[in-house]
Structures are given as structure tokens and as C-alpha cells.
Length: 68
Ligand SMILES: [Zn+2]
Ligand SMILES: [Zn+2]
Image (cartoon, rainbow, N blue to C red):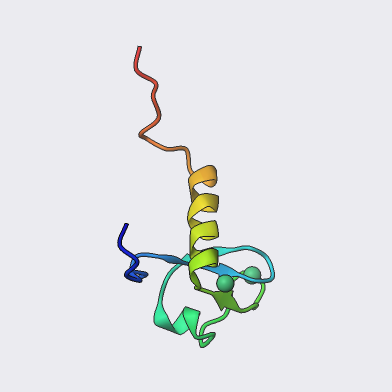
């Protein structure tokens, strides 16, 4: 609901290879390059959200409904 920009626990997404790293100001401002390909990260809302989704698909979640 709130439109406040709280990106402190967001992510940055490499624009070249799609590598995801936790958000830091250095990465967001392109002072730190991708460890995989040397490309630039983007930490805007859209990329942070994409990165979050990518991580969710990568990591098998512990919260999946496997009860029964
Ligand atoms: Zn990269
Ligand atoms: Zn972006």
C-alpha cells in the first residue's frame, strides 16, 4: 500500500548476464561491477523486483506446501 521507497533489502540485477546480488549503494551506482561478467548492475525498482523473482525461482523454498 505504502508508496515509500524502501530498497534497503532489495537487489541489483546485472544488465549483461542477469546475475543477482544483494543491494548496495556501490552496486546501484555502478561503482562495483558484476563478479561474473564485469557488467553494470541496476538497482531500480523494476530490476530489484526481477532479481527477487529470479532468486525465488532459483532457490527451492522451505516454505512450500509439502505437508501431508
Ligand atoms: Zn554480469
Ligand atoms: Zn533497472
